[in-house]
Length: 200
Image (cartoon, rainbow, N blue to C red; front, side, top):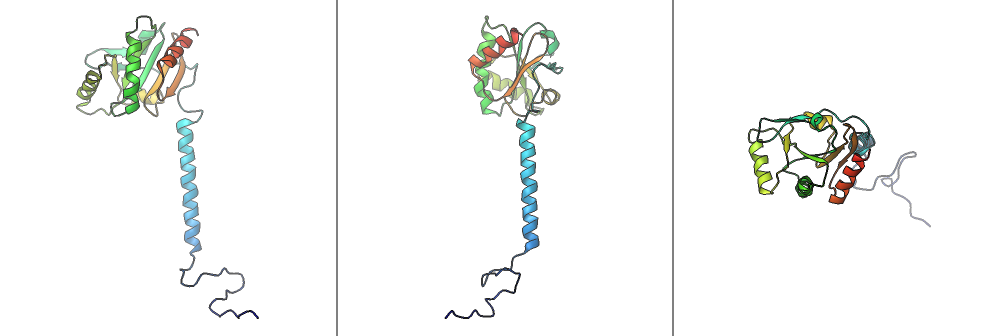
């Protein structure tokens, strides 16, 4: 014969039993937690889509945005329009970015190669603090870099849709975007990008 259930262990019809000693389940809080979790999940998906989805970055074939920025260490203003007829590799980077430090010597080798027919422009995206120019100049000197470096305070980064550094933008001789890509690129890839742009 089965033992009878005590009154305390019996649950009324239509309700769930709660283990003895456990706090009662707060269904309102559970529903709220579930809703918050769903909202956070949706926001994460939307953010990832904005960063890496098809709309991220510039589209190949579209005209390159205007680029007119002061050059580090001089009063010269460099304009992308001055490079019409020539392929341009534009590298957006920052001093605090380890992958940028790894990428830049490769770009320096290309810039120093007389047989490499594309121009290389370095665009620094550090925050525009009072000591920024000194910081960037020291960084370049320490790493043995002599790339022509332009200083962006945000507008170029926004117009070129740069969401991460390093970001490389390849522009053909007609001023059209050939490629926009974040992350590290090998020297072979950079040469290939330049060749493809020149052949357009």
